[in-house]
Image 1 (spheres, rainbow, N blue to C red):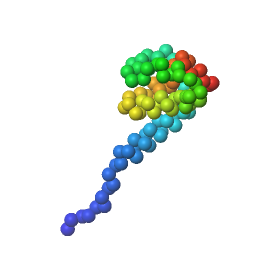
Image 2 (cartoon, one colour):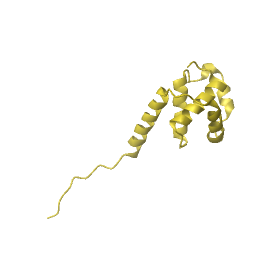
Image 3 (tube, one colour):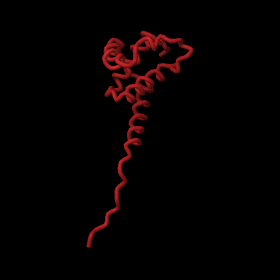
Image 4 (cartoon, rainbow, N blue to C red):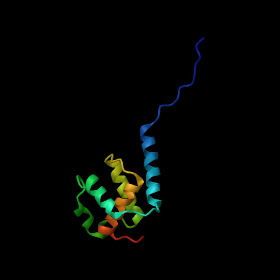
Length: 108
């Protein structure tokens, strides 16, 4: 006789990606390590300038959705995820620190 084992559900890629993205965003929002703005500038120029020119950060601050440094980190992480950039939490923190020092000037 043949043994009938229950079928395992297939992994749901969208749910897995959403879970990973949620964990990444939570880590970014609560990151407390020292950031390196110089390194962030290099990362930004290497990974972000191709599609995201710096002038976008100089728009009217009243129109920006980013109001806090944790929100800025989350937005950098979201953009990296959308473009399939393989950036570490430290990379995202450094880019956010660079953008904060050079454009946003949000309170820490």
